[in-house]
Image (tube, rainbow, N blue to C red; front, side):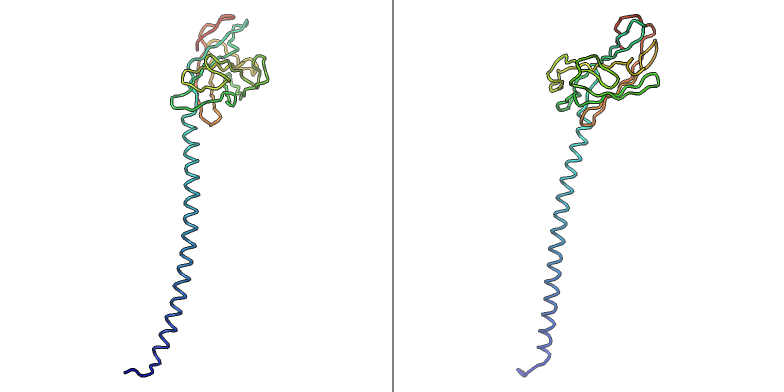
Length: 194
């Protein structure tokens, strides 16, 4: 009954091999779990950043309150003043970093703000006049600014009945789009609400 059994020795050797394989599998599983946890953390951070950028593009934009066209001596509207404010839910909007795109009379122009220019806006730039607020930043819901565009500098002066499309893009990528038409009668040196 308690005799020398050769099978018990073989079983011990099989058990050690199984134990080594089991430990190796546990190590591989632990390494794989660490890689998965790191990847999940990276993807979560990337998803949060993408979500924030998308929310800014949707909410951090301006609203065009009104557009006024100023006529020159040639009875053409050669200057636009687009009055803008912050959209509801938007954060602070620095107009210095905005881009204004104008399409009129078959011509398209992309304009930026030049802080060093005290002159009238030219073919590459628009000017900013703050109605309410400071430092060309719309920081409060009551802040207003006029973005002034020189249409004649790019061959975009409006005659009677001509249309103009203005797109304002903020630094975060939010856009405001407005299409206006010149009145049927334009007189020299008059201002018209388009």
